Length: 367
Image 1 (spheres, rainbow, N blue to C red):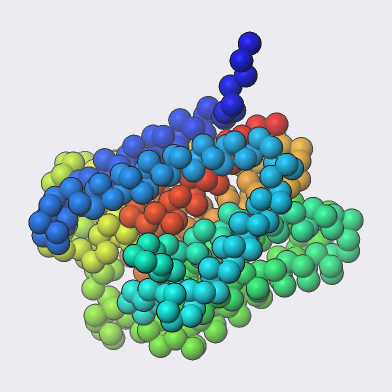
Image 2 (cartoon, helix red, strand yellow):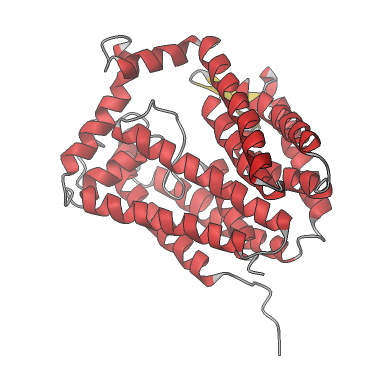
C-alpha cells in the first residue's frame, strides 16, 4: 500500500482553507475598483494576490508539511535558510539593495523582484531559537536568558532599524512564547518574563523616542486628530467604514469606503472593508475562525511530546495572535495604526507565505 507523502492535521487544514477562501473573496471585493483606477484593469491586484499570496501560500504550506515530517533530518536546511534570510535582512539596510516605501526600507530589491526579509525570518528565527534552547535544556536559567536576549537582539536589531517597530515586537513576542517551553518551574517563567518585559519596554521607548513620526502617530491617536491631523486620517476612515457596516453589513461588493479611497485598503485596512460589507455578524464569525485556528495550534503544541516542536507551535501562536489582533485593534480605533497585515486577507506575499509555511509545518506535527 502506497504511503501518502503528506500527513496533515485535517482540522487545521480545513480551518486554514476556510480563512484563505474568505480572504480571497474579500480581496476580490476590496480590490476591483481600486485596481481599475490605478491600472485600468479591475483584476490586476486580484491576480497578484491570487498567485503570490493564495497559490504560492498553499504551495509553501505543503512544503512546510513535507519538511515538518522529517524535522530532525532538515535541521541543517532550516539553519541554512535562517542565515540566508539574515543576510538579506542586513542587505536591505544597504541603499543599493533596498526599496524604500514611505518612511521605511523593508524590501530587498533585486531586478524588479522585491520581498521582505523581516517576514521571511520570523518562522526561521523561531525554529533556530528552539534548536538553541533545546540543546541547552539542562543549562541554568541565567544561560537561557542570555541565549534568548542575545539571539533576539541580533535578529530584531536589523528589523528595528528598517524601521519596523511592529514587526520587531511581533517577533520578540513570538520568540518569548517559544522559549517558555524550556523553562522548568513557575519561578523560572516569572523571572524570564520579567527580563522579556523589560526588553520589550526598552524596545518600544527607543522606537518612539528616536523616530519622530511615531510620536506624531501616538499624539494624533491620543488627541483624536487634534494634533497631527494627517496621521489620524487612516484611523478615522477605518472606523467610519466599520461603523457604517452595522450589524448585517452592506453586502459583499457594496463597500462605499473603497470608492472613497480608504488609505492602505488592500493591506493595513483590509479588515475595515470586510467589516463594512459583512457587518458585525460577519466580523464576529471571522474572529471566531481565527480563535479556532489559534486554539488548534495550542492543542497541537501541548499534545506533542517533542519540546522543539512544541516551542515552534507556541512561537507561531504568539506571532499570529499578536499580528492578527494588532491589525484588528488598529482598524477599529482602539490602538495606534501599526501597518501589519491581516493573515490570509491582506496583500503582502512575504508575510502570507511565511504564515502558510509555518502552518504547514505545524500541520505535520500531530505526534
